[in-house]
Structures are given as C-alpha cells and as structure tokens.
Image (cartoon, rainbow, N blue to C red; front, side):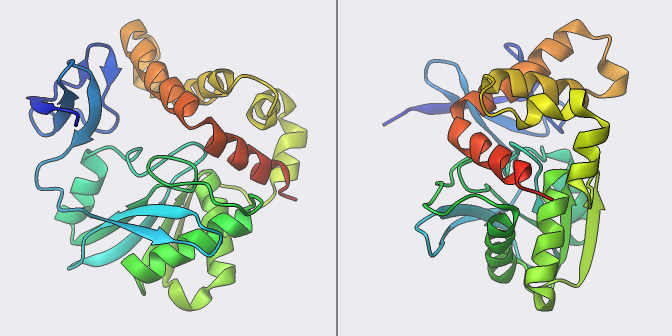
Length: 245
C-alpha cells in the first residue's frame, strides 16, 4: 500500500509544472511517501469517479458532478481528465456549469480495449460518457477533441445541445498537406513518443512564458513523462488521426 501525504501547491514543485493553476495554496499535490508527485487534488473539486465499461472491454474513467449545467470536456491528443488543470473547471463551476471529464481509452486510468482506434470509436466513447454524466449537456472539444466532438454530434445528435469547438478542423488532410513539417512528427508512429511530446509541448507553450527557461523545461517534462507512460494510448490516437480524411 502506497503512503501519501499532502503539501500545498506552489505552481512548480521540484521542476514539476502544475498546468492550469497559478494560485499558490488553491490546490494540493498528493505526494508519495518518497516525496514524488502522484497527482493533483483540488480541495472542493467535488468530482466523483466512475468506470464505464465499453462493449470491447475498454474501461473509461469518468469524473463529474451533478447540480449545474452539464458540460462534457473532450481533450486533445494525449490529454486526459487532468489536462484541464484546476482553475478552468473551478471557474466553470463558479459560473453554474458542472464539467464532466474523462480519460480517453489508453490514457490516464482508462484501458485501451480491443477495437481498432478511430475517431468514430472515440466519439462513441464520448457519447457514453455524455449520456451517463451530462445528458442534454453541451460538449466542448479541444484540438483532436473537437473532431471527436463533431463525430459525437453526428453519431448521437439527440444527446448534444451545444457544441464548443476549440482549435479543431474539419479537413485534416488539407492541414497535413499544407503543413507537412508540423504534422509529420505528430503522425509518425515510428518516431519516439517523447519526440512527439516535445513537438506538441512546444506548440502549447504559453506565449508569455516562452522566454522562461525553467518554466519551459518543467512544462515539457510533464507532457513528455505523461506520453511515455501512456504510449499505447498515444499510438492509437496517432493511428486514428492518420486515418482521418
């Protein structure tokens, strides 16, 4: 049994960047007895966890809370339920919106299942989460998650009241052809997954922090470590993206 203790968050702890939370003392790291960060715990977050078992055996970890206006949040490539940080969900709840988040198959605490990866499969997973956690709610999709959100709306229009699409595209092929130097490393399943993490991390660096060497190193380290731990899920998402028209 792993022993844990808690310490106040300070934004960056031992080189580990806390994504989405810049208010010291507003969240807590749960630390292993050896002093290493395990995951972030946000006091009062109020999320309850639930595993959804899909027809192919995949187990999808979901987190949510009822009471306000429901919003399903679908992350981009490599993102899981923790990628939204703490500040964004907290501000949503303060505005009367209850975010429902989840770990896509193969990422976080979700298993991969046996089906061939595709955007339509991820959309079906998202539909199951929406139906269970946020029926009649809005759907927010980020980057690859925007494509999944569109697929969800086409697959189960009865479940979706509103779509919020951030940094997505309706024509993946055109983007790849126009920007091969950007998308080649993202779609290359032979390249080390740490290289993919570095490419994506460089794209996601906040503009006002790009000159901050310590911040950059910590930010990229978090993304790289997550991608390496969940390589199977990352490779599946790459395969699904490569098959997009």
